[in-house]
Each structure stands twice: as structure tokens, then as C-alpha cells.
Image (tube, rainbow, N blue to C red; front, side, top):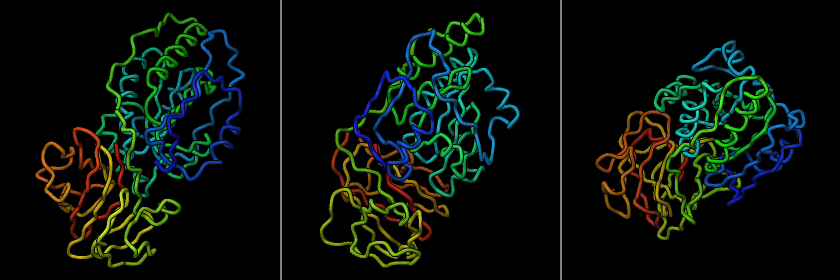
Length: 370
């Protein structure tokens, strides 16, 4: 979400460069971020007799601070001589969450044919480093495959990764044969899974045929125009500030904000006393508002709070059932856990003004859209 690549699709490119070269390219981009509705793919040749040695070997998993659904020894044993799909994700990222159903379906279809999916949880926010929070997300989304915590981005950096979500797929010898960033292009990824599994079966003399029908899920539909992700933390907003108040950001201070008379599209406006934190803003006054003119179908917030009820208004009125998100009940969202909340889910994308009315302790990290 921090760096968008609009409609970029690079398909059918043989990966003949080392990981270091790939890393150098992506390190030339800006700070780590999610691709939002963009896609970038590098894929393999369909030639089953390809010399795998021409492809770069995947780096080892390094700096892992925790293991879920596995142990270090079990994981090393499990991935040996398997086709491995490494999925870089973080649990508050809507793009990552929309990819999970495909990963879970692929795991169910191909695990007994030689596929291992490894979720590499590389956090965006500090609270995502807490293994209890990640375990809660793994349980909530019923993730059955191994998940490792890359809390300091050591494995992220070893791969030269820059985006959430990101998929790196290796053949049974550990060579990277497919790379994909962002949502979408699921058919090509699954076809690559089938190809690599069949190559593995042929090489190892196994009686396995992975040629199957493709997963039939409805992918998320993006609008042609959409408000970008909006960050509330002063560190995250550097170079991409969308705060509309003239008071602006004041690191580590509590600022009294007032709503101006004119509001600009795709900018958020604060009212009340808000503590400026490096990754978020926290409401200090008895009440406070966030007002946002936006264009999108779905609106999500990453937020937390001490069990506070936040009122949700759409175009000045309590949001109705037809536009309410999954976490909005009776025009209110109850904010307690550190996570992503779906507050608006309209029938179609459009221009609206969203107002959130919070109470002390309400802490917001970002708006994301779909």
C-alpha cells in the first residue's frame, strides 16, 4: 500500500538473475509497502526439462522470532524436497487477507502432492510483532499451514522483498521459479504450482499428477479510481502526508485539531485532542472526530482501543445496513483488539464523506480501501 504499481504485469519472464539482483532493483523503490490493487509477476518457463540450476536458490529463513503450526525442526523436515510457496504477509493488511482464501485452497488441494505453503509474517506495525496477536489472527482466519514470525524483517531483507503480499515459489531443489507481488493473477500462480509439482514427481519418480481444475473463487474487484491508503503515524506519513488540518503533524505531542470549512478529497481531518505517535494517532479528549472525503467501495481501518465504541456516519447520517461493513453494527464499531476493521462495504464504489466519532483511547493507524 505504500508504493503502487498501476496495472503492471510481467508474465512469462524466465528468472535468470540472482536474488541479489532482484533485491537491488526493488530496493531502488521507496519504503516497504503493500501493492494495493497492483500486480507484478515473474514466472517460469513451461519446459519440463529446464535446467533448474539457472534459477537462484531461495535464501534461508533467518531471524525468525516465533513459529506457529510448526517447530523449527519440523519446518526444515517438511520443506525438504518439496515445492514451497513462501507468502510474505501481515495480519492487518487487507490485500494479504484477501489472498488467504486462495492459499488455503491450494494447501488443501496440493499438500498431499508435494506443496508446502509457509506464511512469513513480516509486520508493518509494532503490535504485529506480538506472537499472541499473530496466533489470534491465524486462528481467526483458520490458517492451517506453517507461519513464521519475521519480526525484524530479516528474511524479508534476505529475499529483497518490498511488498505485502508477496509470493516466492521454489521447485523441489529450492530454486526460485515464480515471484508475484500483490493480489490477483491467481490462475497463473496455481498453474505454476501444478507445473512444479509435476516436474518434482517426474524427477523423483513419483506417481503424482497435479493437473487439476483451478480454484474457482471470486477475486476482489477494484474500482478504476480509489483513495490511496492514508497513514496517521508521522513516521509512516513522511512523503505521503494526507492530513488536511493546517495544524499538521507534531511528533510525540498532543495537538488540538479543529475542522476547517473546506474539505479536500482523499485527505483526513481531525477534531479534538490527538496524541501524535510514530505509527498512529490516539484520541485524548472526551470526544473527537475524523472526517474523510473518499472514493471507494470498502473502507477499513487499522485501529485499537480499550473497548471503545466508535460511531460511523456516512454523508452525515448514521451508516445504514446497505453500506455497513462487517465490523459495523447499528452504526457503531467496537474497537478493542489491534487489528483491521471493515467499517464500510457499499454496493458499489463512489464518492462519500465518512465521519468517525470516537472516545478517549481510540487509536488509529491507517485507512485502507477496496
